[in-house]
Length: 475
Image (tube, one colour):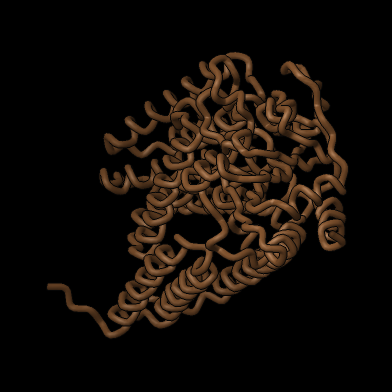
């Protein structure tokens, strides 16, 4: 039986309460209605865990002399990192949230890897045990892959020139990736045998950093929601390994929760796209740039509809299904679509929102965006629930969504073949609001645009919705 000092008992109890808060917070994130509260509960648990750790470091009997420099570094890190994190979270636009999440993943993975590197170098000259070696090597390898992979993913989402959103094919890329993986595995096996070798560990680190780059670059923009979720899972796993390295249960629990939930979400997202995770990692489909002009090369002509005609169709419909996409997010038009829905509902129109699992650029992007505009949660309907209702829908209003509405997904031979889509083409009438005939991330033309039932309303989402609201009110 272990005898704990009052200080040890206090810290362990605080860590336990913090872990409980993580579990409660995570469980409350399964609904947009409680997600904000869940975030606050989880954040409170982390504050409690960090505070208890600080108390332990200050008052533990073996501390010796007070290390002023060390504490100044810790406090400066908390102030700078916490201050920047708070500023970023409060000022970021919803359209830039995926990029910020990717950067947070990179920071988390990199920090976990640095912890393992520091602990490994600290024990130079000793023969580490198998458990310590396994946790350290996995922490460094997974953390390094997460760091560079997340930076590439963030750059792709930003559309940087050096990391374009399209899939970038690396010459011999798969072979290079396999060689890098072999280096990591061989080096890890050598260290697992109980050997201490800083050079081998450095080789694993470098190979893992390059592996993250070669893994993320070939992935096309349409697969980015799955990739972000996978990298988030990697971050959690790296943090859990850091917990084993430091023998810190709160890190183990927090990392395991993030890693497991991220892995489950990644599997669900991949299933929603009818693609295996391995297939996505070996190279995403498409990779066209959304700003690239497209031609109506799918057989048929495009019919343009006027603002007044669109307003009449919507105002005199019995049911309208709104299909939001990334174009709506880019234009910051979530408040406009909510106002249009309220105007239509005042006229007796039944309005629902069709949410595709990979709409936007990160898991749950559309749900969060519309929740920000106070769209009623019951109106947000997932793909499997809403698809049967398109057959009975008078008007489907598509705002900025592209690949997730493309009927080409039902045909073999297309880059999006097999990807489940929203059955927008089953509606009696279809209005597509977008700025141009640009392609989506898959880089192919959308057959929905040449459907005889489709009217194209070429307008920016925010300005177009404002004009549409005014036109509907005037009827």
